[in-house]
Structure formats: C-alpha cells, structure tokens
Image 1 (cartoon, helix red, strand yellow):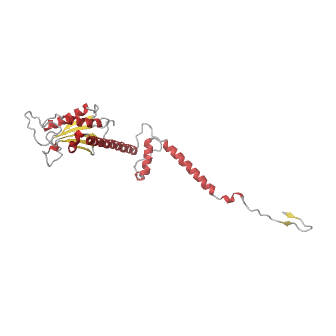
Image 2 (cartoon, helix red, strand yellow; image 1 turned 90 degrees about the horizontal axis):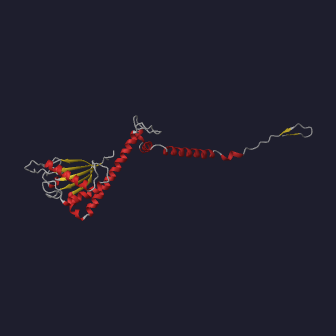
Length: 264
C-alpha cells in the first residue's frame, strides 16, 4: 500500500501473505485414492472370473498353481472368454477334468474296498475265509480274488458248481458293487494239474465255467444288467504262484472292478 505524509514522496509497503489451506495435507489423499481404485479393480476382476465357464476358471487356477506350464511356446492357453459351442475345449481344462474324474472313481472304489473288508470281518460265516479272499487296489481298479486253499473251498472239486457259502459270499460282493457304473470283468484261473477228463474237458473250460458261474450268482443277487463287461478263462496261464504251479491258491476267481466308467 502507498501512503502520503505531507509533501514527502509516497512510501510503498509490500505485504507478503503466507500460503495456507491445503499445504498441510501433502499427498496422502493420492495413496488413499490409489487403494480405492485397486480395490475396485480387484472386485471387478473377481466378478469377471465368477462369470466365466468352469473350464476357463480351472485353467486360470492351474496357471496360479503351476505358471511354468505357460512359459513355453505351445503350452496350455487360458481362455479369456467363453469359447463358442462348436469350439474344442482347452487341453488343460480337459486334462484337469480327467484327473478329477479319475480321483473320484478311485476314491469310490477305495470306499467299496473298505466296505467289503469290513463286512467280511464282521460276518461270522466268513471269518475263516480271511486268508482266502484278497480285496486290493491295482493299476486296473479294485480286484477281489477268491483263492482256493483246499481242493473244494469255493467250488466242488473239478467242476464249476458253487458251494452254498460261496453263493452267499458273492451275494455280499454283488450288493456292494451294484450301485457302481464301473465295468466288471470276471476271470477264472486254475492250477497246472491236468483234469484228465474222458470227454476232453480241460482247465480252459473249467476256468471259464467257474468265472461264468460267479458272474451268474452275482447277477442273481444284485448286479444290474450289463454291469459285467466280460467273462474270461485263463486256465493256468496266469499263475498266482508261478514257482508253485500246482499250489491250491492258483485256483481262483478274480473279480475286477475297472476304473473306467461305463457311462463314459
């Protein structure tokens, strides 16, 4: 401001005002705004993923589990949008689905394995058969083997006639397997003793007839139509004890519940 004092020259005064207001806030609001934007992006990303098809979600999940699969040319690709109905499924998605189905089938068969073993143990009639029945998982599936320990434990000697207790045992097995969609293969085996039958009836016929008799008994007591895929007779070509070809345990009926589902 300028002021006049008598006849003196005007005096010029400069007044400086200090800045105020927003200076004390700094850049904190920028950090808060960035957090808000990040949260909104994450929210919309989650909503986008939820809306994708199941195979695409599985592919995205697979990337985070093992990113190395995506680091080379020709590797699996993540689909960023649902493919057309006629498009082929992602190879990774198909592989993941196969693994899930395989794990479910294996878990179901292991459950049946434990159920059969439990019933055999808890049924007084079969307690003395513990050493003659094997229920175990193999690369093919669940295998149940009825092994002879005497000349006529499960069948009449030299024939395919089932003993009464064998029928009840096969009924127990059939009731456990009847709700499965897995194919069942029944196999018959003999030892290396020749039958010497006058009519030419050999171990080939005997092994096949015993497997077929077991199949018939299980279908009469629980297995649904079409559940048995095959009946096979191997004679003495697949000995349980190759070093003891005439041992009783080589005479057996094997029930294989395969991994592959009939519905596939």
